[in-house]
Amino acid sequence: MLAPNILAADFLKVLQGLMPRGRIWPRANDAVQTQVLSGLAPSYERATSRANYLLADAFPSTTYELLGEWESTLGLPDPCAGESPTIPQRQSQVVARFVGGGGPSIESLIAFAADLGYTITITQFVEARAGQLLAGEACCGTAWNFAWQVNAPLNTVVSALAGAMGAGDALTAWGNQVLECELGEIMQAHTIPIFSYS
Image (tube, rainbow, N blue to C red):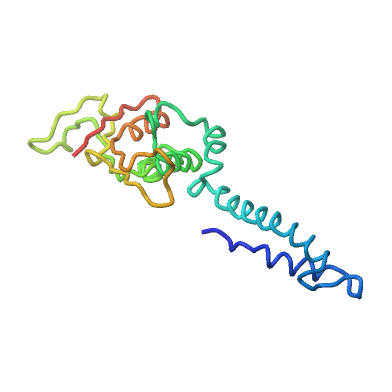
């Protein structure tokens, strides 16, 4: 949400209010001083409008004009983004990188995926042990202690939103390559991720 814009007419009133009082400081619409101040007021209106956009661009989830600067600061774009990511996809990736993974816990990985725009669950595996295994369950070896499975929808669809897309952006984008790539970047080196889509 942007701050309200102050119009040139408002700036004209403010500028006239800052002038001294007296006969040589007329405030009539046809006075030379009013015409000069009327010429300056639109510049202040434009500057205020641009400053209001800076408020939106100061936050990664709403940035548009400074999206490129946010991306370069966070090492984006990278191969994870695909060939032509949409503005919301790029913003989500900036948010996820900015907020970070938060650590090696399942909760932080799920939160990281949510920042990217994906709804996932994670299944952990453990080595089979006598007394803990039920009939019919898989007998997992020691390597399964380091495996974890990401459960996600087959395709996460990102649809165009009026006012949030740029010229040339696709109306709909789908796929999970960003999820796989970004989780691969932040996962612990000794772990084995398995991606399961349904």
